[in-house]
Amino acid sequence: MKNILILGATSDMAQAIAKKYAAEGWSLTLAALEKELLEPIASDLAVRSGVEIHTLEFDATDFSNHRKLYETLSTKPDIVIAAFGYMSDQDQVRTDLEDIRRTIDINFTGMASVLSVVAEDFEKRGSGAIAAISSVAGDRGRQSNYIYGSAKAGLSTFLAGLRNRLAKKGVHVMTVKPGFARTKMTENMELPEALTASPEQIAEAIFQGLKKKRNVVYTLWMWQFIMLIIKHIPEAIFKKMKM
Ligand SMILES: NC(=O)c1ccc[n+]([C@@H]2O[C@H](COP(=O)([O-])OP(=O)(O)OC[C@H]3O[C@@H](n4cnc5c(N)ncnc54)[C@H](OP(=O)(O)O)[C@@H]3O)[C@@H](O)[C@H]2O)c1
Image (tube, rainbow, N blue to C red):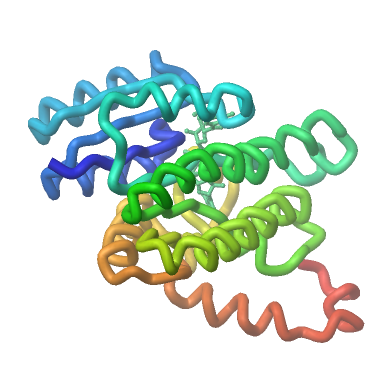
């Protein structure tokens, strides 16, 4: 039975991804910050799907523990999906230096750290797939979310480099760029219905993207065109816009 490791498994998107892979008969290793939040999710999935599920505690900012954590896995994964992330209010974060660090540590450094450990193993084995959830926010810095956006930009660049390194080694690396999604992270925001994906839509896009070995997946698909336009607005005009 193939195994998938999901990092940040209590996230709403991750839960939908876990359901999708369980329904396809994959065994799951679910890793999350708080095991107490994870256990009921895992038990429910195990009862519904009948697949084997392991759980473990994982803190994206506990960098020195990432290698040990991966080495202690009894089943090494065939796919790793990194779904953890952190976004606070931009008005708050831009003057709160601790929050700036937390935003970058979780969204960028934590991702780069743990995925580098996974990459070493996959490279040795000559197989495996890594998908990490970045964001369209990383495609261009905007006043409304440039702290979170810059961490996601770093993540997207990290993944592009990792993909370039591992493509010749039989390892697939996929960057996932959601636009808006209806999850805990955005529960206090008013989101435009037509541009907002459900966690299930994102899970399906990730599943299909990995199957088709896509490099970058935008969810929903129209975000690719929206961001193409946004990226091409000349800086002299862009800097005066309220974005
Ligand atoms: N929602 C959107 O509109 C949107 C758009 C673009 C990209 N994204 C990205 O999509 C991914 C999934 O987020 P979501 O929308 O599903 O939101 P979510 O439900 O709030 O998930 C975020 C997850 O990250 C976990 N996390 C936070 N700090 C962590 C740490 N130090 N170590 C390990 N895990 C940590 C959280 O765990 P706890 O619950 O225990 O805190 C939570 O499970 C994130 O990378 C997010 O940045 C979201």
